[in-house]
Image (cartoon, rainbow, N blue to C red; front, side, top):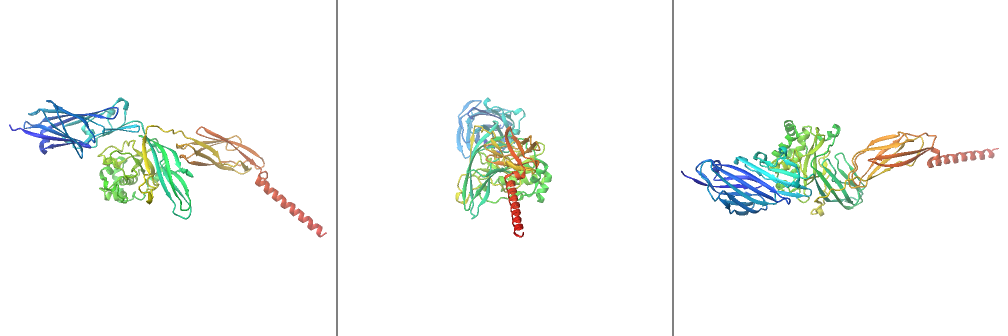
Length: 603
């Protein structure tokens, strides 16, 4: 009987790929794999690759084997088969490393098995960033070439329980079959929160001969992140919050003035969003058409009626569009949702986002855009939109059952080959601005560069292991006049001034008095960003116009209180009223005196 030698090649690139040579050899062997990655405390993965080739015929047997490893670095490569140790031939190429084996013993005959083991170490499987460990297990490019393929991951007990496993595993099991691995592989993270520090520069220019007032958008706290602003230089006039939740710092620029604003702070990123209840009226703006979100377009409407759910829209966008890496550094115009459908092979993250938002809004699902920072150590799999300032764009939609906004990333879902960025995001997305009411503003940090400073690095982000102090610090004051006129309403403002680095959330403000009515007032405040202040209108009922009233009242919010006093005086006893009364009296005396002189003259 004629026996034939077969040379096999198995490629571990970003994925694990099987390429037999000659092409018909795969059908002559049953191929089974079990790979174990044992990761130590320092993130070094010791890999054990156990392969079995089972002869499906009596005519062929394997004499050698090749594996392509798509890791940047490997070491301590060893191999063996049933005949003992094998000296591996290791060579470097553009995709990583090739390991070639010549088997000691050939297994001939139907059903006979050629078993072999390759071991190596690599630091590129697990990465420690700030407070998070991230692990990416390679997928399989051609799962159909393997009868079975399993991967077992072993991590130190100090890592704890995974924060997420993509795709989700029953009981958080760390053994994955070929269906679970798929082409995209497995992504895991360990840790509860991620912390970044940031240093942002905004270039403001007023070329006009008259003064202007302008605003810059600071990174805000959201249902996914808690932002602390430690310093803003120069200090803004005020920092306010818009409907989308953006923090807008206000500056006055005089005639032909240039100003560079530097903002420093920290952000804590959470994996799961907190509740963010919105009323139907609040959400109505997030289903409207905007430039680049062509909700009323016929094609968009037809697709939306077919897709209907956020997940279906996410899957459609991820599969329909293809990332165009040539556009990352080019200055090509934004295509919008309809343009993305017309040019599906020329998309970047903004097109993925625009199409998702337009389809969601057309399906009456509130949706909006997030611009910000996204950490990536592999821009081929997780690209960013602008290399100079590492910006990224992704959408979010409102989940009416969970009562919160949910961020998703169809761009990375596409470029990673199917990693789940719908059900669970990650610790790598840091929002700079939210665009809901307007598809083009506000401008995020990194977008305030000017022509003479185009090469400046305006966005600097680093990891931190220390959680910032997020205790709110604020002062309460009253802008109600200390003296008022009896008989008129007492009106003014309560001022909350944020003196700390953390956001002061919306809460109840109480005003109580024993002498003024109403004796108890409960008011709902808006949130106050760091370096910002908020004025809340307050009024008391008119006092007796014929009686002086000494009114004491107390302002209380979040356990902080301040006591104030207001004097309601009879009009003529106030400085203004007294002045007017004195003036009237003087006029009367003058008239009487004049009249008296006139009578004496004509007597």
